[in-house]
Every structure is written in C-alpha cells, then in structure tokens.
Length: 117
Image 1: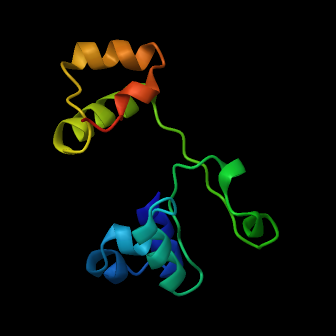
Image 2 (image 1 turned 60 degrees about the vertical axis):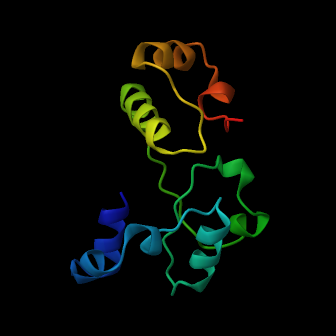
C-alpha cells in the first residue's frame, strides 16, 4: 500500500520510491523516530501505523486526513510475525513455528511480542 500511495503522490513517477526508503516515505506513527520523521515530511504526508483508529490523536478527526485500512490474511500475519520475532533480538525466542502458532491461535498476543529478560 505504501508503494501505491507513494506513486499516487508522485503522479506515477517511481524515482521517489526508488530513492527514499519506505520508513522515510511512510514513517510509523507509534514510534518516536517515526513520529519525528512524519512531522518533518512535506505535505501531503503518508503515515503508517498499527494503532487502532481510536488511538489516533484527537486532532486527526478534525483534519482532512484520509485513512486507508489494510487487512492482512491471518496466516500471513502469523508467518511474518514469527520470522520477525526470530530476528528482532529484543523479542524473546518464539520457539518453533508450531509452538508460535498455538500461542497465536490462543490469542496470547501479550506473549508473542513480549520483550525477553
């Protein structure tokens, strides 16, 4: 979705997409670095987030901003999160894919991404 929005913003010209990393084009609102990048980006801004819309800043609802909500297949989410948890050191070891899937299916999201000791 970020690539599509970036191309729309640049009238189909791919040079911006090829020269600016995606975390600069559509920074994550819920991270301090992403928030700072988003505030510094030229308007119209593209901002990414995993936050539910209810947690957006109140000013958002009085603005002309638009939301594009993207839903992912749960299998895709599971596999992506599993591999991310394996490489992102602050997360604890996810165990095997089978163990991880059991926690995922139980809805034990608090345990999936907890920071290890």
